[in-house]
Every structure is written in C-alpha cells, then in structure tokens.
Length: 221
Ligand SMILES: Nc1nc2c(ncn2[C@@H]2O[C@H](COP(=O)(O)OP(=O)(O)OP(=O)(O)O)[C@@H](O)[C@H]2O)c(=O)[nH]1
Ligand SMILES: [Mg+2]
Image: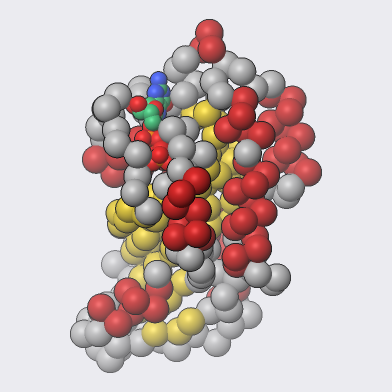
C-alpha cells in the first residue's frame, strides 16, 4: 500500500425527500428504510476506498433539503471537491429546483472552483411514476456542464455504488492531472506531511503515520 492517501470532501444536495440520505445509507451501510426522518442541517459519513494500492477517503456531507436549513447547509459547501446533485425522478418540481441547488453551490464555492458535479435521478424503481423527461435531464446536464448523469434507486441499490465509483474515478483523474503540475512533498516519510492543492480540488495528501490526524481532518472538511 502506498503511504500517501487522499481525502476529498463530497456533498449530497437537492430537494427534501429526493433520497439523499437513503443513497448514502445504501452505499455506506447497505440498508434502506421507508421511514427516514428528514435530515436536520447536515449529516456526515466517511468511507475509505483503495485504488491501485492507494487509499482514498471520501468525506461525504449529506445536507438537508428543507428550506429552513438553507443558510446552515450552504455554509458547509466550502472546499467541496465534488457534489451529487440529486432529484426525484417521480417529482418534476425536484428536477426544476436542481438549478437552484447548482447556483447556490457554485456561488458558495466561488469563481475558479471547478467541482465535479454528478446529476442523480433517484427512485428509478418507481417506473410507472417517472415524471421527468430524459431529454430534459440530458439538456440540463449538458447546458450546465455537469460531469455526468446517473439514474439510481436507493431502494433496490441500482447504480448506487456505481455513482460513488464514478465520482471517485473522476476525482482521481482530476487529482493526478493536478499533481503532475503541483509540487507534492513526499508522504513516504514518518513525518506528517500535508500539501493543500489549489482550492478547486479540495484534497489533502497525508503521511501514513500522521500524528495530527484531527488537524488534517479539520483542514479537509
Ligand atoms: N421507492 C423509493 N423510495 C425512496 C428511494 N430513495 C429514498 N426513498 C424514500 O424517499 C423518502 C425520503 O428519503 P430521504 O433519503 O429521507 O430524502 P432526503 O433527500 O434525505 O430528504 P431531506 O433529508 O429532507 O433533505 C423516504 O421515505 C425514503 O424511503 C428510492 O430509490 N426509491
Ligand atoms: Mg436526508
């Protein structure tokens, strides 16, 4: 295993009830419930992946879609490297609101930030209730330069792990492009080593024996 590892801050945003928490629960704990409580403010989970003998940590922030939390939630957008922008395929309004979420995210991250954004149409299992046209979704994704579009079901698990895999692949590709043009201190020593890359990709490379892990976590997310 490579000594260095990488952390990325990832957001899940979108209207209330579209299934943000359910997608995260499905991916991290492999479970689903119809009786979810609306998220209050933000929730957080973290998951580790290994790709090509290197460790990657996704710090995933599951945000509340309810209007009353909007100011609180947007404060957590800072330094995000990527986001899942989720809507409910059976709820046209949630798709119409995707633009609001996108603009709020881009406004908060600021000019120059270029987060990876994956558009997610959830609840594909409810086949006879689909209310959003594929053509409109594709047009939205291309008009707003989103990285990709995925149709998921948190209920039966369809494409859920894939959407996280896809995001990680995109982050790794972007990161390796940046690394080749960024001076990165070797993380193979026992001394904690951290290198902040430009804010457009919010990653920290951390020495494997980092004693100051808490400090690094704070820097990350
Ligand atoms: N049929 C079906 N139901 C789903 C799916 N994903 C979520 N649900 C249901 O939709 C409801 C809302 O899901 P949540 O995950 O709480 O939605 P949320 O986006 O986190 O909502 P907020 O936290 O209020 O922003 C729950 O009853 C879930 O069981 C899905 O893929 N298919
Ligand atoms: Mg939630």
